[in-house]
Length: 155
Image (spheres, rainbow, N blue to C red):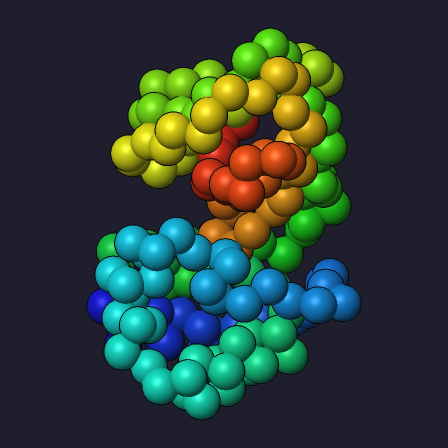
């Protein structure tokens, strides 16, 4: 997505009623993968410009789920069912590849939403925290390995 389309979509936030506000809005760097951040052209912003954009997003609430091909933004306004998941991975965790399935002790199953992989070493049933992020995505943080991956739920 081009930077101008991204900024235009963000501008639509001001016209959308705020239904639920977060106490501390995550920054764009936390909400997006490095590739998404770079592809949106946000890496070209100065630190001051990026801080101003993050402050604006935090002040206006809501999040953009996606931008349609014609440039219209679709917003997530009902965040009620997007709560943090805390559980542990069943069995041994060694990292991930594109088709890895993370089965949690709570019965949920999640898969990486990014391409590529990560070798983490070996961890037995590590605790995980999966938190909702911008654009309807989720970020899974694995305790003990200092690693995280964007994921999507499959069960």
